Length: 328
Ligand code: GDP
Image (cartoon, rainbow, N blue to C red):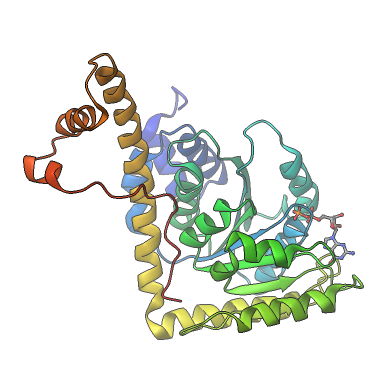
């Protein structure tokens, strides 16, 4: 934080609508120092429409983001874009593409674009990204697009964070098979076959449809739209599908549930980050003792405050994956 400004100054500028203050607030969050800001601003969050956009590299996510921004702007809505590269804090390849494709919006005061690399931050994707979304929400952005490369876990995380998850797939690349393998099919509220000008686009559409038949949906049935992002073709359909999903969330009461899940997810990630660090410390303390692993685990857990009754409970298998939202 700049010495001349301080926390109070930053907060005041943020609340006065300064985009620079929003940028700095997100930088604080990225550095793991966002908690005080969030504490002050959390009450102002909860009104933004949040769209998670995910899919493999090259499918057209940043072109689609740009088209969605254009659409939202045409409706008079302010838009924040958080573009996350969960693969590396150093390679900015994906982000560079973004900068080019979103460039037309850089001078629009109603649009705020932020790229971030999330690996290495406390709480992973959910940590810094969730903070950035909260900050944009508190800032008053009507729509927030969270764009991330699909690399298995990140689709599931984005689904925890966003109200509507849009999964973009690429014709002629065998994506649909991969989606099925990775089990990410369930997180999509809207499927997008982008590059509808591609000769294999219709085939991919059929593949997705037949895969959907194998799944049971209760409540919302995911929609499938085809787009050609650079020309904007199909983007109105995509926007309408997103709006229908949002309307469904409102009408069914699922919105409240999703907000709660997103909240719990962030709390869980934050708590887990701290607990894991403490666990590593305790493990280091117990290593030299030469006892059996069960006794060592008991000691670690006692250091965490576990009671004798808790230690008697049989251990549970490690929680490997964040739970998938919804009741499908
Ligand atoms: P990302 O890596 O998923 O963000 O993909 P980009 O938005 O960077 O797009 C990758 C490439 O695909 C770029 O060269 C785009 O111009 C191109 N592209 C995006 N959408 C379409 C489309 O609908 N049709 C065609 N033919 N190319 C597209």
